Amino acid sequence: MKQFTLSIGDSAPHFKLPATDGRDYSLDDFAGHPFLVVFFTCNHCPFVIGSDEQTRATADRFKPDGVAFVGINSNSENTYAEDSFEHMVERMKAHRFPWVYLRDKSQDVARAYGALRTPHFFLFDQQRKLLYTGRGVDNPRQAEASSSHDLDRALEEAVAGRPISVPKTNPVGCNVKWEGKDAHWMPPEACDLV
Image (tube, rainbow, N blue to C red; front, side):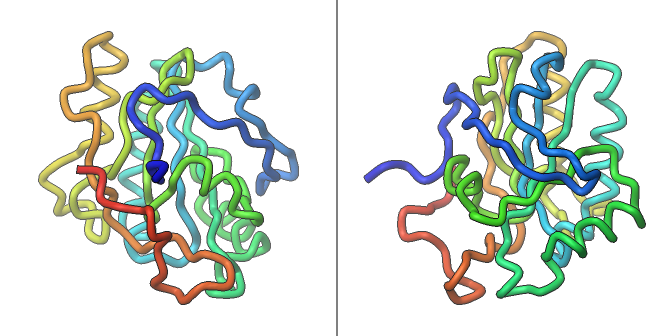
């Protein structure tokens, strides 16, 4: 059975998706950045809401190193109406997050990356090979109480040109809300990363 989530060293799957700023973005739009963080997120999940400011701090911290952040919402709006594109636009206007926020209505991109939860982070190098996948912090619902800042550590190592000491962690959060499925359904091939 094919592994659900990308493995370390895999290439970033291509995408072309609409963003809350009115533009469409593809993987190629970030070619000028030596590192790219693609993360699956949404509007309503308490693990996302609890860690958005930590994610903002990480994005701001590593921006001078050329790290770009791309948030993707793949959740079914039929499961959670709050995850509609209109609510995405409102949320970005209210919070002005330092990333582009893309809508994956078909959920094809979530399947291609193997997104397990919201939030789930994928860090790619200049060649868009996967360096790290998993959680941002170990307590995203109350990020300020986290004892492990896994994405920050991976980015510190990546920008310093060092190997990633812990390349995989289990993402912590709500599962992706798949179209036509129960709110807690996970694909049968989805499994823990470590």
